[in-house]
Image 1 (tube, one colour):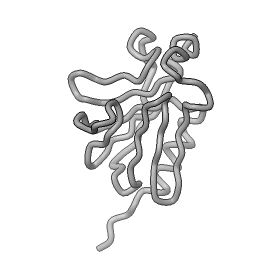
Image 2 (tube, one colour; image 1 turned 60 degrees about the horizontal axis):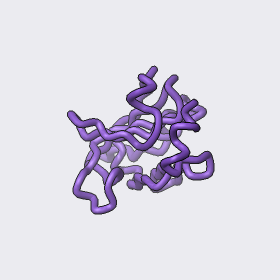
Image 3 (cartoon, rainbow, N blue to C red; image 1 turned 45 degrees about the vertical axis):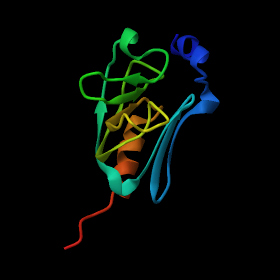
Image 4 (tube, rainbow, N blue to C red; image 1 turned 180 degrees about the vertical axis):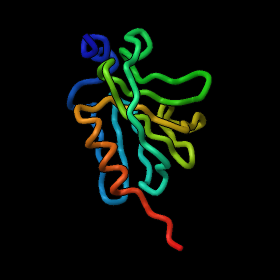
Length: 123
C-alpha cells in the first residue's frame, strides 16, 4: 500500500535507500536527500508504529519540530538525531532538520551500525 502512495512522488525501491560509509550517512527518498558526516549523528533509536495518514506518500515534515520522515512502511523505523540540523525537505536548505526518521528493512542493523561508527570522545 505504501508503494502505491509513494510512486507519484518519485519514490521507488531504486530511489529509496540508506547508505552508511566510514565517514558519512546518506538517505534518499525519491528526490529528497539527507547527507551528513557520521560525526553529526548524536543518537539513533527505534520508533514506530506510525499512522498511515501521517507517513504514506512523500517525505514528511514535522510542523512542530521540523523533523523529517522517509517512511516506506508503518511498522517501525529509526529516528536519527543530529548534533547540527541538516538539509532535506527543500533544496535551498532554509529548513533544517534536527532529526530524520527512516523505515528500513533491518532496523536493528542500522542502529547497531550507527553506534559502531559513531565518533567517540577523546580525552
